[in-house]
Length: 248
Ligand SMILES: NC(=O)c1ccc[n+]([C@@H]2O[C@H](COP(=O)([O-])OP(=O)(O)OC[C@H]3O[C@@H](n4cnc5c(N)ncnc54)[C@H](OP(=O)(O)O)[C@@H]3O)[C@@H](O)[C@H]2O)c1
Image (cartoon, rainbow, N blue to C red; front, side, top):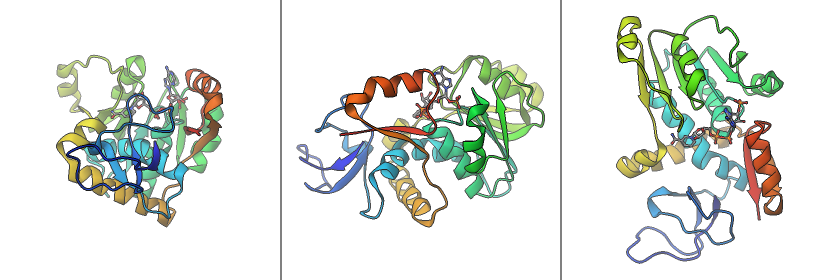
């Protein structure tokens, strides 16, 4: 969510009433006053619009965090992103391209999303279940299950899968060893809790990338809060193109 600080809780330092803030709220965010943990809140510069802020505070942090956790470097030549059409995926595609990755493979449930993904910088678009040919150095998966297995198969030797999925499947470690592959997990909440300065620094980095035009969040909507049920159906049916945003 994005808004302004209405009240600061007892013992919380560094925040003032009226300050512009973006944050993650795990519940209760469909409201005009939202309680958030100070550790999950970041300041938002006035030159960042609300839609950009709300897309980046979660999707940007997760996409950037997962790519960095997987060792994204200037010499990474290929990256695969699943759920590429969602809020995290559309930003991961753009962040990988902005980092200079040559091959960015966007995997999605429907190739209807291919034109959007290509416009965001994907060099290849594939559908789950299709044959994916060339191996990749780094993959970010938020789908899990059979898609996760397919992603692991698509890793090059010493390639790394970063799982950000709540539905990640079991991994056979011996198989990883045989193929010289790696799998790790990334979670935004542990980053904010255990590396709070990195979390805040990355927020600043994301605002800067947006201001430079290196990334432009893909927004589905925005929808007035009264249309929340319709918006939820769009996600359930995987029809959202980018980050679905509700406004009050
Ligand atoms: N680790 C973390 O800290 C963290 C934080 C936030 C989110 N996440 C995870 O990242 C994932 C993506 O989040 P998001 O914000 O990008 O979501 P979102 O904007 O709501 O996008 C959802 C997209 O996921 C894809 N998808 C794949 N399987 C799906 C299914 N069974 N039902 C609905 N959609 C499905 C669809 O895109 P395609 O058609 O392109 O497949 C859909 O459009 C979620 O699974 C979430 O749990 C992890």
